Amino acid sequence: MSETNELRIAVIGAGPAGVYSSDIFLRQLGKLGEELGLGTKARIDLFEKLPVPFGLVRYGVAPDHPSIKFIASALEKTLDNPDIHLYCDVEFGKDVTLDELLERYDAVLFATGAVEDKPLGLPGADLDGVYGAAKFVEWYDGYPTGAREWPLDAEEVAVIGGGNVAMDVARELMRNADDLKAKTDIPDNVYEGIKANKAKTLHLFIRRGVAQAKFSVQELREMEKLPGVQLIINEDDFDLDDDTIEEAGKDKLTRQMVEELFTIREMAEDMEDDGDTDFEGNPADRKYYIHFNSAPVEVLGEDGKVKAIRVEKTTTSADGKMTRTGEFEEYPVQAVYHAIGYKPATAPGIAYDDRRAHLANANGDGRITTEASGEGAQVRERLYATGWAKRGPVGLIGSTKSDALLIVTNMLEDLSKAAEGGRVAADRDPESIDRLLASRGVKPIDFAGWKKVDAFERAEGAKEGREHKKVIDPEQMRALAHA
Image (cartoon, rainbow, N blue to C red; front, side, top):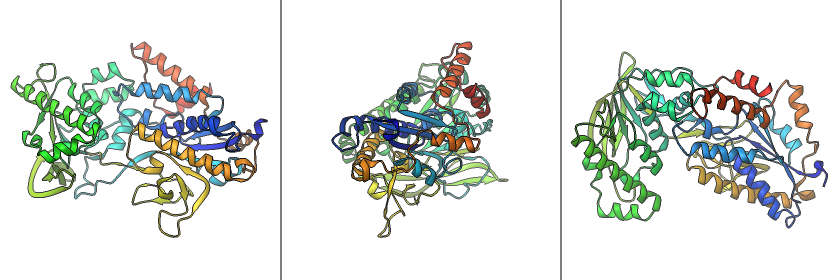
């Protein structure tokens, strides 16, 4: 089969969703292609707006997650495949349009992820000192277009949220800078920022109960090992009724999370009994309060700045239904971080489902539609979505893999029904996209270019006895990649 007769697939977004989908597409095509009349060869071009790949694995997860380097390493192995061509520093909708892709590719798959916060929606949300988690995460992860400095002058801070991002944010706010630097790839500006952090007291507010939180066990274990930090809980939050315990026991992950939270309760009691110590029994100079059944209702301010947060006590039934009690408490804080969910990115020319916060697709099967829902929603041929772009900002890496398999199965089914075994793009010259981008002065960074950036980061890290040290300036990334 000649190269021009390969199936040609464009994938938008080189984060986990895009990379996994590319890998699964090639594997499934190899298994099923002959039977479906598609052959077994495809060229996948993976477009990424940032100068480097890996999306949320590199820029959306706290740097002290030990599993991250394993995931990044697995993604890198996938990209080192002659049938997958990486085009970083190419922005969909700006450097290349949907029509131009459809002319050159038999199908286009959107794996665009999320970079924005859902709005807080409370009175006082616009006060100086209220921050969305996404922007803070961008800062400590060295996002190429993110902030380079972060105001960490509040001695008392609140974090709102019952999921893993809230845990990440709280942990980084309670972190010891030297400990973080020794174990991670944080750049110098983040180290200096965290070293100067004045936070001494942190309140984590979770609206529902212990059995309804969405923390992973790994997050909880990382919370348990913060040097210099005393964990403080409310005993009443752990007084679970039989129905709640039975319900939590039905799901393995929920059961494990609840068991780990009870371990934290015991740790907190020991820390208090030992005279306000950290997990190693050393004197603690920071206090981390964990409040369940606590729904923030208002951020209070003075002279335009945060001065406190008002919280209503709630109760949560075994089935997860939350009820407000009308009992309020105020906590003095000078900064509030909200981690209540991301809003996945929109894509030019693609309808968006605002209610569910993802690209409009048919019954969640990944086939892009003309509008979000209703009788007028028609499937648009050759266009697909996967990951958060398909389902909204829920689920972890495991969900992204199962998503990819579902969407790839649908893509292969549709391609097999299309004329000429799915080869419907008019322009089948594999170099056509390179000429188009060159004519616009766009210089993509390929896999070899990324490897140059990665090698530099490893060399810089080695100078300080670290595995890796992130480059954060996009111009420096480009210079390294194109050298």
